[in-house]
Image (cartoon, rainbow, N blue to C red; front, side, top):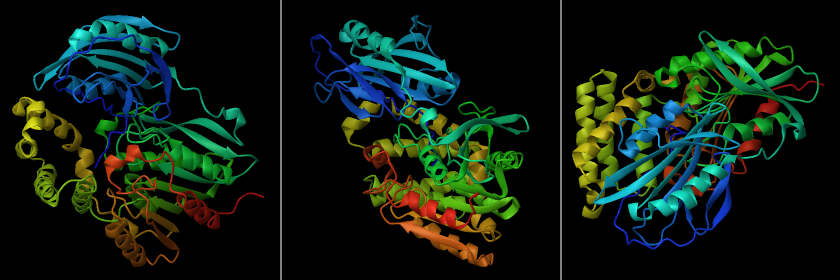
Length: 511
């Protein structure tokens, strides 16, 4: 499943409610580490997702405020917001607001569904390669009071979160770097231990979906895997290079038009960049790839002669079509779905993937439309009513699925079998899996990885499954994707020592 990690989850809640008289709103400070922001929210409102607070005066109260940030351009964030707001384009601006931190553009619109209408306030600002969003929705009866006391107050108080650890206090150097790759320039961070080097180095390659150099996963979780891994490994004496995906953060290029070959090229460019550095040991360059980054690791392990070792973090070892069928099945069951729904979904997935592989857009649209209708009709009547016009809903799903899956990236993922490249990889490999991972099943991928590495004649590999870890290597209960936001924003205890100890056994640190 390809997660757009910066995609804002601001689903508009539309249901019946009682109209309440507006009491005086008392505001309280909040900080959201997942988005790196701080500001104010109404006291007593309930956090329902990262950056989203709902009033919840009764079960049907739709009043909420969302305050979020995305490492993406304003245009890309707006494109993700418009379908949620039932709009094809932003309305005419209702004004602007200048604060010490941002220059905001304000909008006002109405959203209807299930017999309920809410008024939506929206504020957008772009700064330092990030887009910031504040959204408030309320019943029209209460809008005027909440617009001033909640929305405008939130706009005025909203600022980026102060860095918890100033770089000057770190026991190592963090250097901003630019990595050229043809017409794309990748922006990254190279962390270097104290000393002259040259240092062994690990290149970090992100999973699927547009992600920044920290592999920020908000709103799924506040955990930033690559920031944590880079800090841990650098404190152990290793240099670490991580970079924003093309088209994300400060990197140039267009992520939406890229496929696996482009991401392989970017990782290769990162390795080439390190070869220009005197403070890097050119014979000790390793790569850690997470999820789809593990696919890139397989590709480079088979072809790049400058790589000395690989860590595959939930890396895949089966063909893309097989991976996705198991993935969808396991996610549905872990998130509370039925076996029947899992079977129906896999029937759709099989036909949908075939349509993508054959570039059959008409069939893809028909399949997706019919599947969306089938899903809604399987819901209780009250939930069907809340959706409103089923045809409009299905057409919206089709548009989203075409953008997400009918493209070169998905086509390249379906066709690629990483076991072929793992079978050509003879450098040391550590493959770490999560026993409760529903996105890259350890039960399916660990044996396939071992078989491929054995076939290569590789005599220096280790395959580790951490029993309670999910795909993000959190300590999980079900492993389902819906569980991610409910878990602590940290790795399971065994994860960092597992990768750190293995790497240190395969490198020589400078004296």
